[in-house]
Length: 226
Image (cartoon, rainbow, N blue to C red; front, side, top):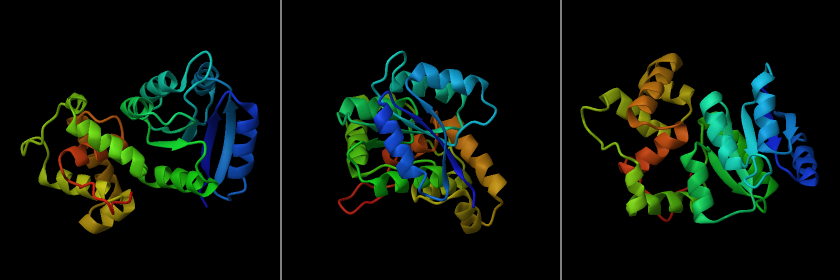
């Protein structure tokens, strides 16, 4: 079984130790490092030979906060997926973290089961949004602030195959599942995914999902569950 390597970044040592104890009970989860602030985290990533798959990122930390650390790490290590794990549930906090490249957003009062589920979803699919986060994304798209997503759905922008791949990404399909459904290789799927990121100016797969919501490739309904 492939281990998911995780870093916990939080300035509260008691919380770090508690979440570490919880996660290491799972056979597929491995905690590789703990950071007490964003600066310590970034320094560690600059010299470690083994980057993590996922970082659990608090927002309010000394030296460098979680939003700034996410922004920096997204540029230097774009393959690392970041899950915000914080006490702050305000719309502005959620919006900022998604804007700088976070793949998911969790509150510290969420259930242990949900934390583990989110880690696995983000690792396998690149993103995970609960109903509250999806609602905020939808509100931003429908408001004037949503205009910051500048690309319009132009038939010439995306090829038919790229749209097929984007729709399946929005349906929460993994790379292997997309390859099987479209009768193409996983490497070809990755190529289309990279082209989509470039063409839509998205930071990551989570950004592609936001793009898909904006362009009505997926609809937010009362029974929508992602």
